[in-house]
Image 1 (tube, helix red, strand yellow):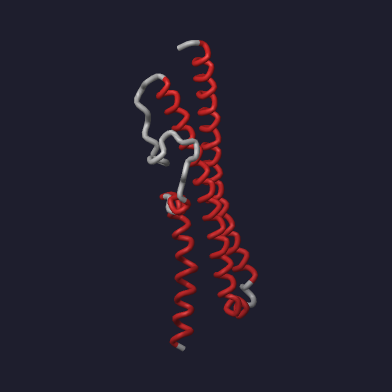
Image 2 (cartoon, helix red, strand yellow; image 1 turned 90 degrees about the vertical axis):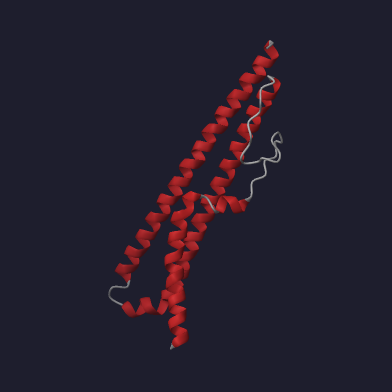
Length: 162
């Protein structure tokens, strides 16, 4: 390996390390978003309980708006978390492509890019949003979405029967 290749390798290595730091930052942001959502929901229920304690009839008047507002907040946080996953996966793909360029120069076998198997060496990483919305870490969002949705369905069903 001559000096020019060594410098290029070191620059690529530095780029991979910087991308890795950014990916870790995205992971931390994703966790922070989940914690913030839980905090917002607990605060909303607590404040709502305090506000409607005296005037419970107001809660029953506005319950659909309250549940729809909660659903909106949950979906908003879910989309923000999916966005962080989208960009983190995109950067992971770039890190693997960077590594593959170096492995190819040294005539070593390249790594398979799980985020972009069709285009292993392309710098344009194609990540599908649908994959980012279905991460295993989004189970919390599914649970939080299920509760107000079930309550709205039950309410609509009761209204239909009465």
